[in-house]
Length: 171
Image (cartoon, rainbow, N blue to C red; front, side, top):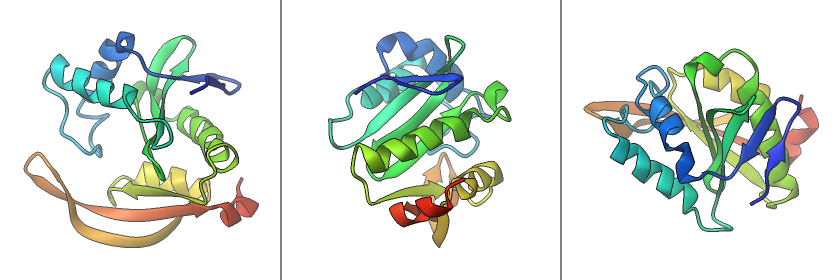
């Protein structure tokens, strides 16, 4: 996997050297409020998560560490194609970093990996992510109830899709 760059961001392959930075994100209740797991309790839990990110088989997915000014601020990419996912440090929210990283990854998904469409599964209460994905051209294709058991709480899903044809309307 290659390194990708935008004007402000560096997207690169994860290494175990990223463990502390990701544990800070994944153990933060604010950052993980709409994540697919509860906040991580231990460094070992974050290590296992990071190892699974590192071990994504080529051709099955592509996940990137997102850096700004040399500091890890999150991750964005495809743990498994065609579903896109992202998580950022709360202090990186509201600066346009997610939209900047995702625009690059959407373009790459269509131009380099050859995906015909990209999907996202978002908690309906995660208004910021829904706005972000809509801004990128994703369209709601359905809703499902009780799709994720996060700790002891069931969460619902909004399913979204972005097709190559939708790129004509891409901002």
